[in-house]
Image 1 (cartoon, rainbow, N blue to C red):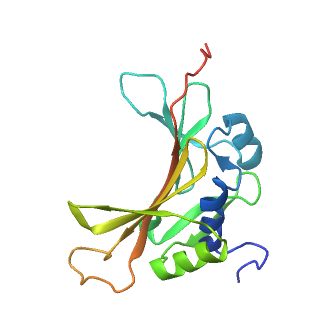
Image 2: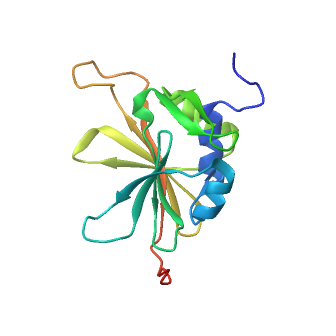
Length: 177
């Protein structure tokens, strides 16, 4: 049984597109803030082998990149998995959500939330398009849609959300020691 106080994942994504926040996860959130809200994330190591920073972390299925000043600079949500584990509501807790979301369901939720977007298409990727949002200066959110679950299957009438995430403009991290 689902908790009616927790919005559907589709509604959470619409709010994310509008505000740039998925719970406490937002561009620039400090590792200390995130740890206070969700507990310590799983650390996966360096993004680039030769550099100490940035580093990969995760909360359940969510993939985070933190810069040298321990601020969240990128978030990736691998929606294609079909079911995700998201952090919360309590510290150290994870909750499962169904992440199989069609384009019509997603755009209806975005319209209900009065969110505007730009559609990006690519000449070399006819089976993919991206909905881009800019909830604040220097922050970009993208929802990538695909026309089928696998290349062995026929093209769908209602495309599927494949991945979502945000990134921010690079900044100069102060030396942290």
